[in-house]
Image (cartoon, one colour):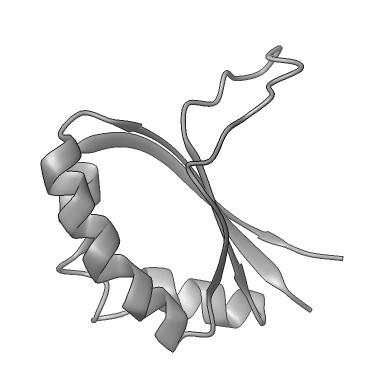
Length: 96
């Protein structure tokens, strides 16, 4: 069953964040990740619980693959580029 990594990101340092994007993508792909959305145009219709800023959605073959990416040794040194240069909410969710 597919799983999705969903991140809402408010970028504070665009130059540094570009480096994060460049480094994170091949690591996600190594774990079977396919980018389905990456900061594209949004049409936000309801904001009762939260107001999204910039959404990234990566589809993985399974929850195990998504978790392996987030917890991987390859991603560990790249993650601080995101956390130091953007505010984020990250979640993993199983697909149907």
